Amino acid sequence: MVDQKEDDFLDNIEDITALSEQDEGEDQEELIDIESAAADLEEIDAIRAERDDYRDKFMRALADAENSRKRADRDRREAENYGGSKLSRDLLPVYDNLSRAIGAASEEMDESAKAIVEGVQLTMRELVNVFRKHGIEPITPEVGDKFDPKLHQAMFEAPLPGTKAGDIIQVSSEGFMLHDRLLRPAQVGVSSAPAE
Image (cartoon, rainbow, N blue to C red; front, side):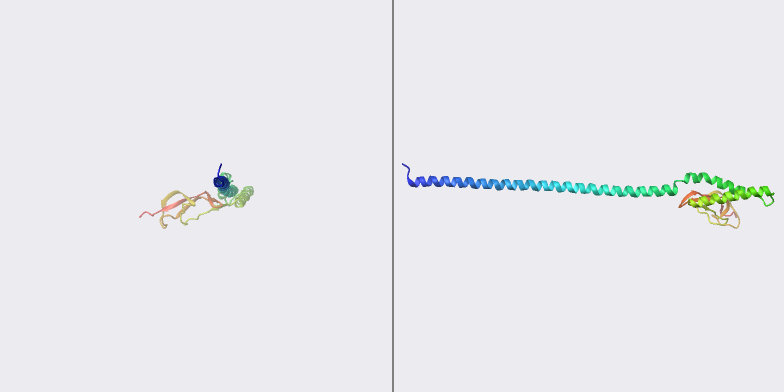
């Protein structure tokens, strides 16, 4: 027969084994909870990274949209101000021809010729008004002014006594500005250093 002590000992072993298994189960649950928490943290980190990525893309898209708006505004203003520059350049010879016609008219004309000259002058005034309305301003240098390569085109250079080098000695045709851009430079003759 089995001794009572031995039986108690075996019962204690069974109890200890049961307790040990219960503790392992709790430890196992704790391990599972830690692993699940770690997985949750990794998922949160991934979501944060994705959020940051979307925020970055959003900010870049917002900046691109703002740049596009500014570029479109600038292009619209340029088209408004300078879109007609080709037509304006094509009208400049008309202005030149009207100026020549008015300059060629003499004081000794009969009445019918005076009426024609008056019509040409009215047409010239209207053309100048249309030019001003659209931002076209004439560049009218005078003899004796200093040559400015940004506004004038030197057609010839000649020494002329009584002038300094770089002075305008003759104006061949007027120039024109379209707002702040040069449409056509004034064509002038320039004095070189006088011959001695």
